[in-house]
Image (cartoon, rainbow, N blue to C red; front, side):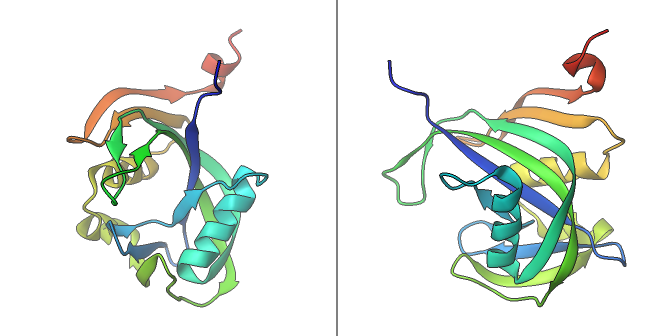
Amino acid sequence: MPFPTHIVSAGGFVEDSEGNILLVKTRDGGWVYPGGQVEAGENLMDALVREIKEESGISTTVSYLVGVYSNTGSFKWYDGVTDVPTQVIFDFVCQPVGGQLAVSEETTDSHWVAKDQVLDLVTHPAIRTRYQAYLEFKGEVNYIEYITKPEFKIKHQTGISKQIIFPL
C-alpha cells in the first residue's frame, strides 16, 4: 500500500506593535499573508519562520496556533499539468523581531497593512476565510475543511477546544 501524499503548510499572521498585519503580493495569487510548504526534514515552526523571511524579509517568532485547515479538493497546479494533493495548513500568529520589507522569487511586494484593511486587499476566498477566522479567534483553534476548485466551498467548520482534544 502506498503512503498517502499530503502537502503540509504553515501560514503566519505577523502582527507588529502598531496592530498592522504583514501581507505579501504573490506572483500567482494576489495579496496573502506569508507562509508556505514544510520541506522534508523540517519542522512546522521552522518552516513558517523560513517562509516568512524568504517572502517578506521579516524575521519572526511564532506565538500561537489559531487555525488548522484541510484543502481536500483535487486540482491542477498553475502549470495545468501537475496534480495538487490534499493540503493540511496550520495558521499561527507571529511577532516580528527584525529584518526589512523585501520581495523574493515568489513575491512582488510586501507591506504592513492595518488589521481592519487587510480584507480590502485579499481576494482569494480561502485566504479571506482563514483571515476572518483569525480576526474572530477567541482562544479556540479553528478547523475548516474546504475545496478551492472548481469554486471555493467550505465543507466543514468547527472549533477545536481542549474538551474535544482531551474529553473529560
